[in-house]
Amino acid sequence: MGHATRCIPIINALIEHNFEPIIASDGIALQLLQKEFPKLESFELPSYNITYSKKPKHLKLKLLKDTPHLLKTAKKEQKAIANFVKSNAISGIISDNRFGVRHNDVPSVFISHQLQVLSGNTTWFSTKIHQRIISKFDECWIPDYADKNNLSGILGHVKNFGVPLKYLGALSRFKKETLKTKYQLLVMLSGPEPQRTFLEEKLFGELKTYNGNICFIKGVIESQQTITQHKNMMIYNYMTSAELETTINESEMVLSRSGYTTIMDLTKLEKKAFFIPTPGQYEQEYLAKKLESEGIAPFCKQNDFTLDLLSQVENYKGMIFKESQLNYKKLFGLF
Image (cartoon, rainbow, N blue to C red; front, side, top):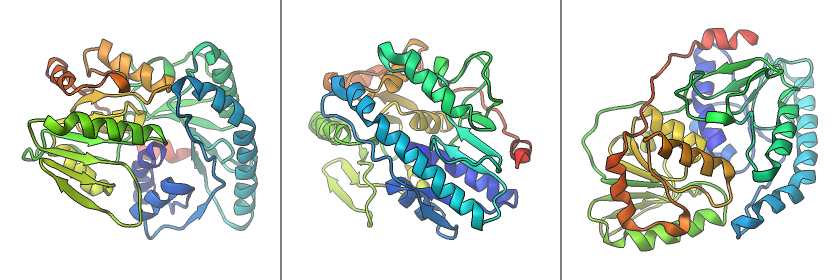
């Protein structure tokens, strides 16, 4: 979902610069982009079908076991793209972490904030594999700031990288607006199962006695939007981009995973936040610790969350970074 939503501003910029984007994805990411861009051509790619283990300590083992499947899927992607290029005049390919979405005869870009891939004691290996994949593309676009005041830290900043790197700043589909406060707390859930459901159940229990208005977005994409109310809590299964932009702007504080796209969205809207990393996700754990150490936002582990921890937020400055203007015309010069 995060990879799909952060591509929305790029798709909009392509349209503004007279390109005709074609969307290729799968699952709920494809559904979301089709809802956002109903007039654009789209087609389905082979699915990676990534799921998480119920126990975080088994996550790395599961991902290692899934590696042959991921590589096989990447080859299927490459074949699908090759067939598509044969019958369509394509100026360029932009792949957000789809390993096989590239073509030797078409300028191909890889979007990633992970030039280093954290995986505990196998970080060196996962990083080497990922950098080898990126090296097959013509450029790597990094959704982050180039200077030391950045979002991704060691993930997106390395020296002497073999492929041209371009920093895009914080990529977000949202714009900051000054709106009247409607919610004291906005809960935004995301990420793969079963951890998304585990956190949902945990939060429903802990937030029963919260003193203020809550908007709770489950992050479950379904054919129809559902809205229910329970005491001081409005509960949505999902929101469109426009609805979510307004709701975040109307909220004093956001409780969410420390996923990178969420971090960029909250940076664009300069929000106060509390993060709960997905258990076993080294990247989210690193980002949450980084933001806390820099006095930006507090965090805790999923099992440790209690309602009183939210009071820590007032002691942090929030998601405020120096904004930079991206020159899309220059960026799209590759195509």
